[in-house]
Image 1 (tube, rainbow, N blue to C red):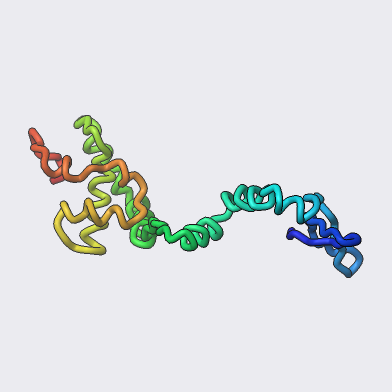
Image 2 (spheres, rainbow, N blue to C red; image 1 turned 90 degrees about the vertical axis):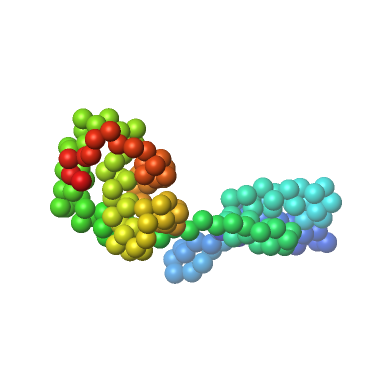
Length: 164
């Protein structure tokens, strides 16, 4: 789909057109006639239409921001460590065992996800448990966004967990 111009006499018209293969050759089908180019430009409708369509294009949003001198912040997260280790964790049944052992404890957060995160962090980027809080923000780990690890490690447990 694209925009094409067509001249009739001294006037130029804009049309939205689509190419289709018909009988071994390409035929153009006019989907919509937008009107006379000069009238669309004079009224500002052409710019309005382009701005409106641009909302749906990530590429144009980035290019438009660069043109205006704005910066665009993108968030990227690594998926590899969690993707691989999550499967191993699930196949070995580690999460189920932790959930069963901690079931009566009534934690206000997912202890299984907290343990998963800290083990994953130690495997791929050894450091303190507190460092795992920052590390988790750079990785896509299911259920980790709901964890606030500083609360987990700062709190005093009344009695040790049975698997410590």
